[in-house]
Amino acid sequence: MRMPEVNGRWVADMKAPRTADNEEPAEERAHDFRPVDKGFTEEMAIAEAARCMRCKKPLCVEGCPVNIDIPSFIEKIYERKFGEGLDVIHEQSMLPAICGRVCPQENQCEGVCIRGRRGEPVAIGQLERFLGDQPELASTPEMAPRNGKRVAVIGSGPSGITCAGELARNGFDVTVYESFFTGGGVLVYGIPEFRLPKAVVKHEIDGLRELGVTFEYNSVMGNLADAEELLGEKGFDALYVATGAGLPKFLNIPGENLPNVYFANEYLTRVNLMRANEFPKFDTPTKHGRQVIVFGGGNVAMDAVRTAKRLGADRAIIAYRRTEAEMPARKAELHHAKAEGVEVMPLVSPLEFLKGEDGNVCGVRVQRMELGEPDDSGRRRPVPIEGAIEEISCDVAISAIGTNANPFARKIGGMELNKWGYIVANEETGRTSNPRIWAGGDIVTGAATVILAMGAGKKAAADMTKVLLGQ
Image 1 (cartoon, rainbow, N blue to C red):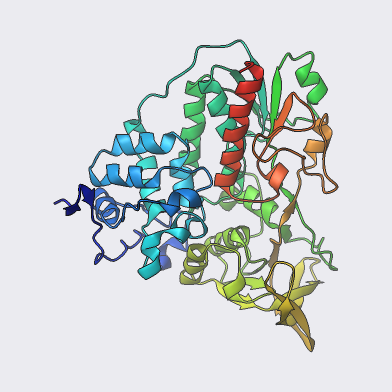
Image 2: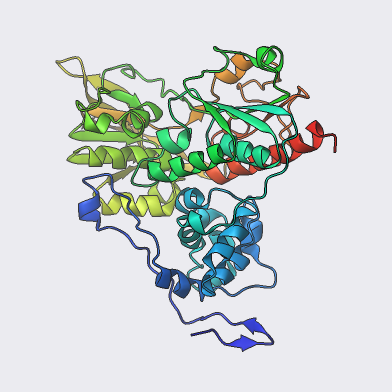
């Protein structure tokens, strides 16, 4: 079957509803770490591709932070030319299997999809993932001849590995320094298996090795070596710093240091990367709480509360100081969490964690809130309701209210930082105050999305190539 044509252009199937996600049953997946979404089958992908209007001015491309030619890869899916579709994506992004799973498409490409003005937008993220999950179909990337230049990339998160891959294809000798014992950064320690399988990330790391990229693990740069040493005796011509923004923000309330009160990054790292969910088979312990409360409303908070549910929580609560409608988390993640039995508690703010007789946290005292006038972000400011204070029982509490700059950027040195510890870098090129150091990702922008971090790595690699090769 082919879509009808008018003046040589396809006409979208305007009557077709959006293809439903291929999800595991919520009552089953909530008890293990299987992927929530199984992804589109071939026929599902082709049916969804048929919904694309192939606009003359595709706003979806403008909505994508790295400007992927979305209509072209969707056309290739409809024509069953999946390898060619993957090649289209690879012109701008080397991580479609990752971005298709974790990008906030509803705020980017799908959010401006013209088809969505009169119904549901095209499922661009699902189609990207469909192609990304078939990496064997892609063409072999073209490699420039080795140019003799050496670059050190500090951090193997999405920005670092994107920059490393681009530089390797441009002929550079690239070494990636990673503080953990495996590559991927926040993709492996911060995002649970049920959202992003570790095997998907490993495949991308293995692909970089095949391009000639060297990975040095357990290497905490700033402690092991600083910028002066890397650019001096170690002989690197340039650095790309992508250390991320993983330092947790404190609630600064009494009891925050009680046992079984966690920061979300710590909690997720223990489970995602150090297999705490399989303790004592693996020797990283964590408390598998029966009553768990998570403070925050973003994707990290959702990941933490859904992880707690999978570790056996009878009651898993996500508490947020505004309403559910204002939560910054992806709507899909909120939908999945509620389907899995997570309880949403809006308009509460923590005042104090309470200590039980055994010395561990046993509850939290919270202040009930109401929404007042809008603040600088345009959202209505939460205001305490006088006298509305409650106590909630819990045996695990998790703070997921955001992060700060990784302090190792300061230890690496050699470049200007702002007053919050983030690296000052040009948005378009990644250049820092040091002409031999570039930087990008969350350590420049603050906590943002995977695709924005990738975009920064790609821009920096292009500029480094121009500068280092004198183009």
